Image (cartoon, rainbow, N blue to C red; front, side, top):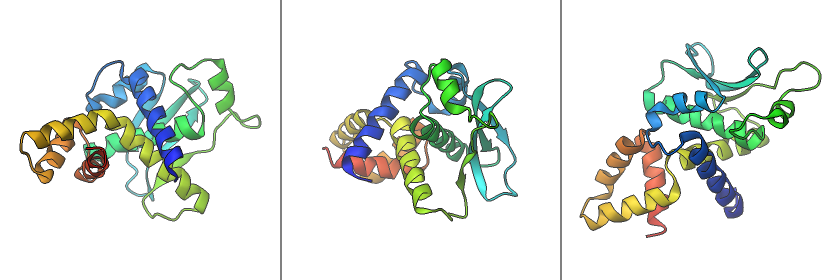
Length: 193
């Protein structure tokens, strides 16, 4: 993915966060905020599948629905929710005000159901699917840990004498994300400091 596209996704993610989170910063309750924005979030057992989350259109409620494996680590669940939100926003063109335009753009003409998008655990994707997954991952990381927030945080923590390892641990706790996601955003922030 080129820099222009990465920056665009970063900006979209931060704007969607501003709307969905309504000034709140606790990623742990992302599912609650999404429900308020018109997105259903459901937890179920997906352990016997090759997926750990997917996105579908609920034709009864006329709302998008994110379905996540209930048995994943809580940090993984939050990232998966944000990842599926990325698909919803970037690939289904949904915005957090569910007007008639959004509803009509999501429902296919033949069946009334949108194709299911999902994150596979086996990693077997086409090139187009890989690109979409990369975009959704970048959206999720940007949504959960906004760029300017993390740059300011890392800069402050370094001035206080904290090591990179300690800052990464703190980022994970502060933003309720895995150490892997915290490390990626930490390294990105370091490019700007």
